[in-house]
Amino acid sequence: MSHAVHDTRYHLVWAPIRTVGDKLTSETIKNYIRYHRHKEKSPKQLVRFLMSTTFTRKYGTYHFGSSLELTDHQLNRLVKVFETPTHAVDSVLGGRTSVAAAQLEGIGAVVVKHYTRGGLIRHLVRRRYLRWGKTRSQSEYEVLQTVRNLGISAPEPIAYASTEGLFFYRAWLVTREIKQPSTLAELSCANQERTQILMAKVIYEVSKLVKNYIYHADLHPGNVLVNSSDRVFILDFDKACLSRKNRNKLRDQYISRWRRAVVKHRLPKMLSQMMEAGLRKDWDDMEIKVKEASH
Image 1 (cartoon, helix red, strand yellow):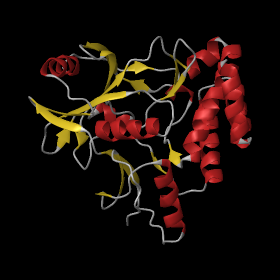
Image 2: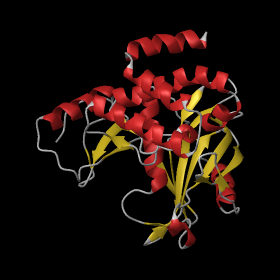
Image 3: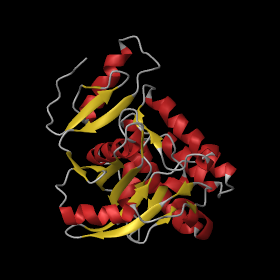
Image 4: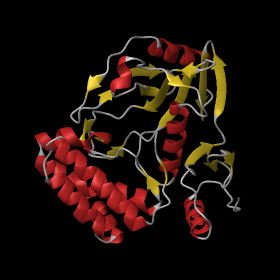
C-alpha cells in the first residue's frame, strides 16, 4: 500500500510487515485514514514512524542515531552519562523516571532519558529490553521528530542510543533541555490560578494530536511539562501511534485517560473538567483563545 505524498524526510511505517510506505505529513495521515475506511482493518496493524535522514553510527559498544552528525567528543560525553549510575525518581503521579543532565559542546544543555521498566518486572529486569524490531529509544526519537513536524509542542530530540546485544539491549534518549521545568501535576497542586491559564494551551496541543489522529498512550498531567515562559510540552511519546478511530472516539479516549489519572492521584478536579469541556468545544475557537492567552 502506498500513496504518493511528496516530502523528502518523513516516512510512515506500518506493522506487522514494518515496510516503508507513505511519507509522513498531515496529508499522509488523512490518506491513511481514508484508505482504511475502505479496507478491511486488522487489529494487528500498528503504525510507527521513521525519519529517513537519521545518521546512525556505532561508537564502542553503543549504537547511536541522530539527525545531527555527532562528533567523537560529543559521543564520548554521552557514553560517560550512560555509564554513570542514576536513580529513578518518584513523580507526582507515582511514576518512575530516570534522567540525567549533560552539556554537549556545540549543542548545549541536554537531558538523557534512561529507559527503565515499571511494574513488578522491574524487580527482575530493570533496564534491559528484549531486542525485537526498533529499540524504544529509536521509536520515541522518530515520533518526536514527527509530532514536532506537525506543529505539536514536544521536546526537541537530539539522539537515541542503545547497547549492542544479540538478545537484550539498554536504551537512552537525548533531548534538548527545557529550562526551569515543572509538570502540570506539580503546578496544579501549587498554583491553580496559573494552571487554569495553562490548561488552554494544553488542550490546544491535545486537540492537535486528535486532529492528526495521533494516540498518545499515556497522556496525563505528569507528562505535560511547563517551562519558565509558560510554554507547555507533551512528553513520553515512545508508545504513540496513529489511531484508526474517528476523531470523536479518539477525543473521548483522551478525556477518559486524563480523568482517570486526575482521580487516581487526587489532583484538582478542574484539570479533568477543563480538559473535557475544552476538547468538546470547537477547536478553532480554542486556537483563538490560546493566541489571546499568549499576548
